[in-house]
Length: 312
Ligand SMILES: [Zn+2]
Image (cartoon, rainbow, N blue to C red; front, top):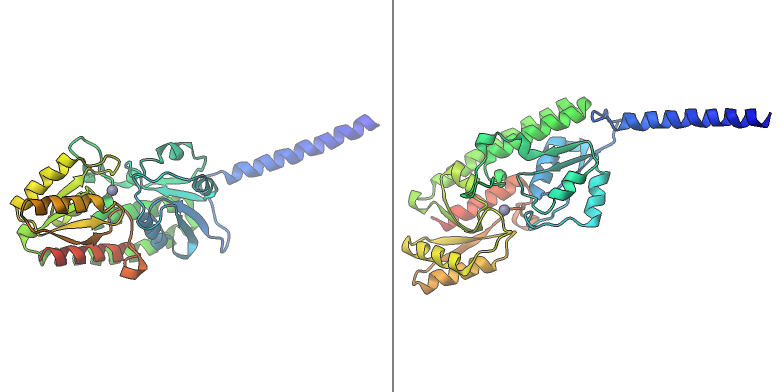
């Protein structure tokens, strides 16, 4: 009698366990239909991506960026809290192309099913490389290329949340029109700078996409990553070139310490050429509310306004 009872209890328990495992398997599927007003929690890395995803996702998403204003993504090391946030997110979006140089291992260990690596959505022939063949990750400086990044995120999010696909696409189309206008704005501002003055001297090589697209020459103190520091010889060589060519201005970058640019300024002046620091450019993070540059569009406008003013 007792044995029979225990057996039937065990059978019920077994069935319950089966039902629950069945349920949790269902939840792990990569295509999800969201319920009513529940927002999709997206965790991303840079401020540029946060802004882009907010424009695409609109009211349907809640986006958190791990890196704040002025943070250098090449050097950023994730904290334990970041890892927790990544593991709890519905969707993770990161840039890739080795921008988040210290996070590669974390990304490879994530258990999330919905991960978007934006670099995978950029056509290979659009990617720039440095002299050593490393891919340049600073794609957001080419406004049209940033639009392609947005298209890729839109498509991927639409695959994950099929019921929101049309909304994401509509949001993207609207935002793309704003990006098209921004592109025209950069072209017009560039045209106002004399051709021989279209030279950008910055702390690290972040502006190649910008230069390629809008017709500037770039001379940087450091390479495409801030992971390697500039030597005194690098600075001296660049100072020689700047004083010979009578370049008017050099620029500070928001996410790189000023000291390298200051060192360059001193080196140029010691060679008898007066050079000015033309202002601060936002390079690897968006700007701030104080300068009306907390969005991607605001940042690009702020940069081109600063550049065109200094190089007139
Ligand atoms: Zn950079």
